Amino acid sequence: MKQHRSVQRRIWSALSGLAVTASVLTVSTLAGPTAASAAPPAKETSSVQPTSVYTEFTGWDASGPQEGWTVSRKGSQNVEWGFSATREIAPTGSEGIFADVAGAGMSWTSGTFGVDTSLVSPAVDLTGQESPTVEFDSFSYTTTDGTYATSHSVELSLDGGRSWSTAWAGDANQHVTVPIPQAAGHAGVLVRFHFTGFAQVWPSWTLDNVFIGTR
Figure (cartoon, rainbow, N blue to C red):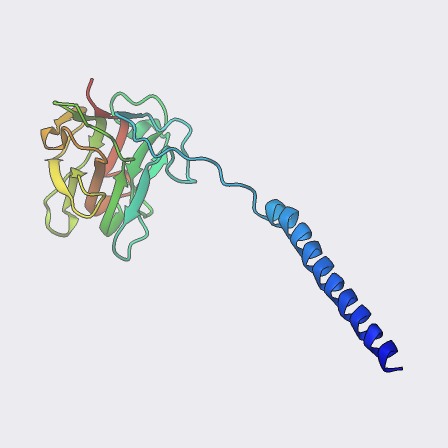
């Protein structure tokens, strides 16, 4: 009888081992396809920076910026760069959709105080370029009248957006070319169009046909 019970224990132990092994294999087999179907492989992305950027904002809409551009804002005001096709406010040279900063209100002369918003380019590789420029078609309205004061500037970052320097500031209703020799030879150059101040309902700044690089 003792020998019989000993044989039973050995058989049960062997069967338990097989059961455990089978269980592990089953989980492993099922987990593979399930995980793959739940999380499809990520699309490959390129880290290569373009050596120039030309943006016409064609096809852009209220859904937000495209082609590596970003929009940011500071402060409590819910006003930032947007995109429009209203011809009455288009910058000279624009033929379609363009970027604009416009405040909120019930008339063309009303607007929003304390706006601080930037339209930021994708990173550009200017390595090997000696005389790069930023070019754009612009329509802007600038005032230094107290609380209605505004500023429009083109700024550069050579350190991934941690710090910015002004390359151009002013009021322009024409095609603008801004030399940026300080960015020559650098990779990862960011350009931003920075607006601050009182944003009118009639846009305070519109942009189109933006070029960054060397012609």
